[in-house]
Image (cartoon, rainbow, N blue to C red; front, side, top):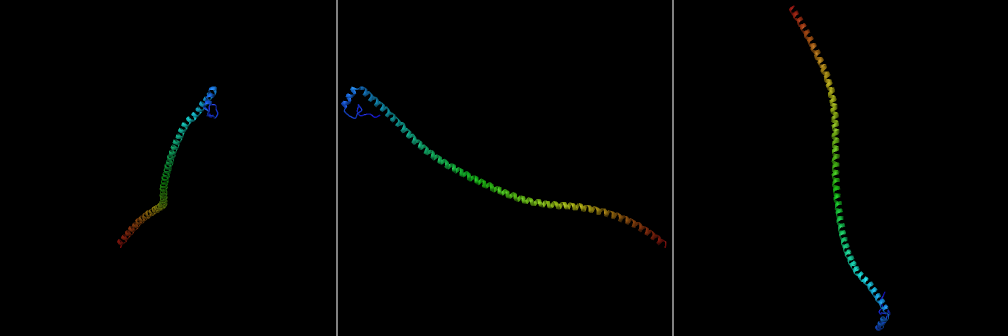
Length: 184
């Protein structure tokens, strides 16, 4: 609702006529005053709204500034996190490489030890087979030696018996020879 420049609502600016119109019809004047009060109240709302709106604009600028600060902090945190992740990956890669090198060295050492153990095992098996053959040969040689000892013992007994018989024959021959010599 707009406010007219004259009390009657027209655009004339004759003050005397305005005064006569007010005196002649006070209800029109009261209605005009009520319209003026309503327009003032309406405008007052806009004026009051401007103050909170300016506060909102200030708060909006503060929020923008805080958001900018938060964005800077977030970017910094992302950079620190990326650096930490990169460092962790590098350390993990180094640890994996070191562990792999140690594992490769252990596998190589184990392979070398297995080859040496296999060679020793083959040598031990060959020596065991040789020892078993030597034991078998020794058993055969012992059996052969026992058989030869028994044969030698029998031969010695036979020789002793033959010597005793030869001594008996010799004594008999000597006795006959003595008797012959005496008989001459």
